[in-house]
Image: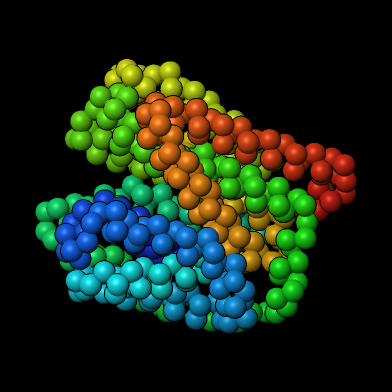
Length: 392
């Protein structure tokens, strides 16, 4: 049992390292632009290209890796992240850095999908949701600590130190996987056709749509956190930085809270999440111009926001139970598609109307996610025998 706990913690550490690599660069983008002698908009490709490659390549790369020993897949993927961070610390060429942003993005969804499935395999079936919740904690800790710590190191030590930090975390996870994870050959080799076959289900596509809308709802507003607090609430940079930290810390608690709710009643939790998002965005719009109420609203926002990952993954996984790793890769790809859509449309709305209206955009996406979830459940009521077979 102790070894299993350490192994799951190691997988969570790998997820933490990946999130720190993926999102940490956002906070140091101006320094990266100066170091590489490019404009900030050009440096922004290092962020956009990463998300786009994940969205496009995820399911295909997971299919290709589906017949390889799980420990080999996880160790190889996380080693790519360690090497890439080392390259970031050493290079002064934009093309080299862009290439080593694309390379880890290719294996990003493979690590996530295999790590989640592996964590569930290491424990009894009744504890599978608890195990995946612990792995997902690496995401929330990455946002809460990894991203701001990367910015802090770049500001107070050097940009190279920030990237060496990312390399060290990923290398530590690599060594932990080799030490604590047993060899895990694929016991049941599904054909590629059988895995892709989960996409023939209308239920699956409704679940996918709900994931896209959930992440669009989350990031159409969160993606412009600083602008909203600056221009709508009138907070300065020190307030924004502190509240980002509060937001991330609350997300850690919320991740485990939503995991517990899923174990009690997955269906009600899946319905409740977009409804809660809708309510939070109405609250943000109402209290946005007022400092004191906004200080109360932000932890509530972070608590709700944290549920998007674990709830969406669990919900989509119900319809991909015959090919769980491929299903997890679909979750990673389409959640990134939702992030891309939400931040793109949010950026357009920001330029047209200003940041306060972003709350209504997020509410609209949340309403669309709720509609897809309700429609998905209505199909189960039409054929209740299918619903009875789904895991909760």
